[in-house]
Amino acid sequence: MNERIQKLLADAGIASRREAERWIADGRVTVNGVKAQLGDRAGREDVVRVDGRTVKLADAGRTRRVLAYNKPLGEVCTRTDPDGRPTVFDHLPHTRGERWINVGRLDINTTGLLLFTTDGELANKLMHPSSGVDREYAVRVRGNVDDDMIARLKEGVLLEDGMARFTDVQFFDGEGQNKWFHVVLMEGKNREVRRLWESQGVEVSRLKRVRYGCIFMPANVPVGTWVELQQREINDLADMVGLERKATRRLAGKEKERFQRVQKRQKVRQEAKPKRRTKAPR
Image (cartoon, rainbow, N blue to C red):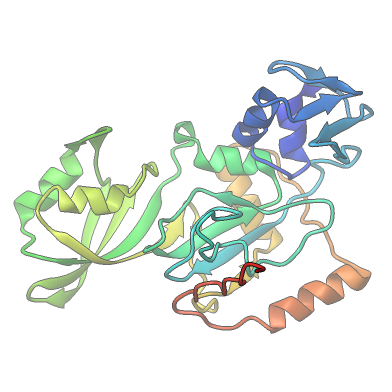
């Protein structure tokens, strides 16, 4: 059965559907030697290339993997950064014939739970507002917070890009001007948690994501490290957004050894160190 090309690329784990659509629009995708157009379909027996490189489609989408990463301060959520800053992909394990897709983003000064998957369709579903997947953050604020302010934040505040609100705000800990709250959002607009608090004249001094949908930040994952989710947890994610369950790909041979070696060598990193700049040749 022929499917839309962006879905095939997402199933192959090399991009989310949105990213694949951008590739097609930019003329980077060909099918059997012909430049693809948005809306085109292809089968798994067709030769699909991205930037001239063939994408393996025969077994695309039959398995999925998910990582939970505890993001430190100072990393950006892009594969490469023009300013040379550390990225969230720098310390992830390599995958064979797949690539990790980040589920949503965290800004450079936000820490905590960031999910990665090899399944582009799962990534797209988890990020799309129609799925109604909530995110929970622990936030430390400086300033006076009263019941009226919390009520406004839950009712909705008009920001420059539209209405925004927390679906829940719970006091967690602290005294005086510095207090910790846990807040829940149903979508992930840029810097939304910070902007909501700042709209009330309150400064956010620490921000950490602790939950994405049904996945909580694992207690055994220090800052700067990752863990691969088990089949049950991956099934829960799929069930939550109405996707069919798929088996977790089993590693074997040298690939398994390499994965385990990288996993054991992980180091706690509270804050990412800037990359060393290489000197330009004279």
